[in-house]
Amino acid sequence: MSAVASVPARRLPWARLAVLGTGTLTMGVGIALLVASRLGMVPMDTVHLAVAHQLGWTLGLGILACQATLLATFLPLKVRPGIGTAVGLVVPAVTADAVLAFLPSLNSLVVRLIVFTAGGGLFCLGVALYLAAALGPLPRDGLMLVLGGDREASGHNGWRLALARIGIDVVFVAGATAIFGPAEAVRTGAVGVGTVVLALASGPVIARALRRLRRIPSLAPPTSAQPRPVRARHAAAETT
Image (tube, rainbow, N blue to C red):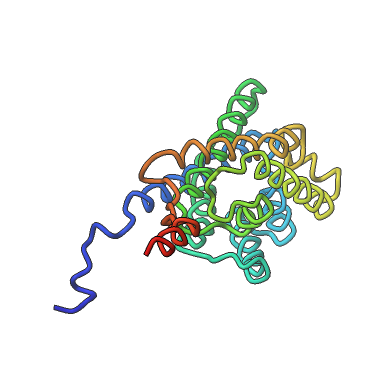
């Protein structure tokens, strides 16, 4: 029997793959709801929408183009991509386009506020889920993990992760405003009060959710084997 054939199926990370799929789908739904609310967007998506608007693309194509370009940051940051990187590039983009195609126009401010709140919550939960799967981050989230001192996405450096995310989001909002132009950015709903709220709140919510998810046994970060203490080895040597 070959070595490949003898590998048991249970070694495949089925639980993590399921969490990855759930997380990226949830992100896509959240993105679509935020766009439909016209009250503000996830800061990175303001850049996605600005690029798509300038080039006449759908939001999904804007997401794919921007994230693929940002993959170049993995080399200097020494971040290792994985299946999560590929799935995170494609699934949220396709899901957002699909959901937006079926969502009706929202006119009631109350309804828009509800949709905005649901979209923001779903997006943050989706990010935490796919990061907890630990199968590879998106470029934006890889940058957040590096700056937050948590390359393994363990969730331990909560506030540092949150602050890193806030800083990144502020830069994205400024970039989208420059691409759109201030008036057009506000008119399209890409940049608004909701965008500012998301820029300041997404980081803390994602960091807190990630920390809780990593406490689940099937999603817990691997623990390295503890080496034998040096003093103990020296003591053992002296007694022989």
